[in-house]
Image (cartoon, rainbow, N blue to C red; front, side, top):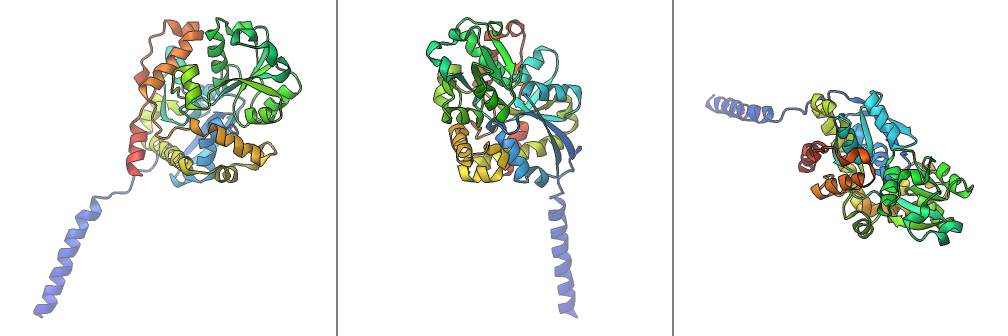
Length: 344
């Protein structure tokens, strides 16, 4: 009898100890808005590769999110979808957060995907001999993904270096992917500001000569003064405040993707993305990824110098920005990335 009583007492004591321990590990709160619409301008571009990978590798689903992706012709249109309310979140250019603050619209980045723009300015091969500097682009037809997109901003910044304005050239929206390649091959444009795999395709085919390249650290230091945040995940500030758990899960998915990218081989990436992203040439896509890999963020955090570089670039060519009072701390919220990193 004494042995039985002791056994019961022992079990009771263990249960009492286990109870509080279990109570200390509550389940994570459910996302406030598990079904989301995400806007992007040119999903097939390597600029937005982390988005495609987060989708294809199942990281959104792993976070309990049902994400519908709407792909537009350029970043300006995906921004409009967020402002208009048809998208909840956007993967787009960081400079949109600065420009919209100047217009009184509060949007905020929550994760850096690209620490360099990865954008390349190239001239049609038969025009290359007459273009020795950016000022020689005057009067030319230059293709960008869409007017008002990051490829347009990049072009404007380079033109401003040589004293030109955007009105000194004809800016034409040509989209991303094969439509951009076709525009150059048909002679519809004289130069192009675009991204990989479009640029690698045109270079390998001998259609263009590169004038300015922002895919590597050295080139960015020369062109833009160092880190210049490119693709980010951004949302309206009020959405972040009302949906902190949803925002955290979005960032968790992207942060895991950035970590996956650090060790991924070109073959790994080529296997993960849709076959149509290869532009009909798998080896070309792998070469394009290799050329663009340095641009991806390794931490998900935008450094202060990068924010300042982005603002300085905009001030060079945008008269509306010259007198704007911008609080760069309000353009990026690092809480979610830090929490994602701590959890891994």
